[in-house]
Image 1 (cartoon, rainbow, N blue to C red):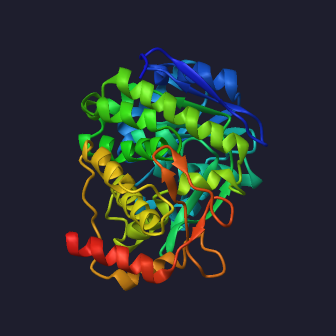
Image 2 (image 1 turned 90 degrees about the horizontal axis):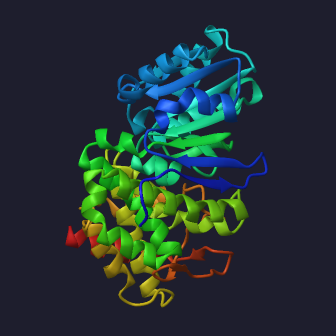
Length: 372
């Protein structure tokens, strides 16, 4: 993987193409980047209670020093706050601050912040511009790109939301240094997914660079973010609204999201997706769709980031029930994205997804539960 110099990736979008800027130290240039790519009368900076003292306050001060009016809005950290309630609270706070349609919402933080603040931007006064400033690995390599915004419901993840692409994404790999190593590992699960579905060589590079990536080395992080964003940008530019090709990005997420809900969001997103990828690769192997040994190779790669185990809730039937509420379900049947082999997704009977018999899903989950 390449060097730590800044890179730009262009993402095509129906709502207007946008750039993903990947550059160490970019956060210090935020006021000038906002002025150049998303000019506005005022900016609504949104950050959670963990990121606000680290970067939100600093960004607001930098804007003020540059003569840019910016207000900081803070919500409690955690996936459990990505709700309709906090969407409403933030919306009310923007209204109380007198913010009109001449604002830009700036999401500073991880995937939860990007999704929640993005949904606020998508719906506030019928939609205002958005800038994503991801500060976590998962947000940089995945969540900030593609225009999906939304909130979770008790019955499932991201069941209420909107497509609302940003005007700009500013990814500063230096911010990753403040994350605990476990959170870096969680985010790298999405990078492994990108390699698994689209670039086996990239997956090998991730494994080879695991130590540097886990340590938060800016050169390694910058390179991984750039390649992941290139891969995802190519997919979402071709299919922004998940009518076809974009479905491949759901690999590992059908079971992964169900695990998160079953555990009341106490399980990290990366841990859940890692388990989902292993299990869904096993499903593919059992159906004869996926090359034998693929699940084992994915599990080995994830093991380099400490994500080898498959944590399951005690009730497999409860997990099966949650799969029926997944937003990717069709006519009450669960569909899965399955690999042909590492780096290649298998074409399904309905686009890029495959109907999998419930009994087989139960069997694979049951076998995994006995391993745990």
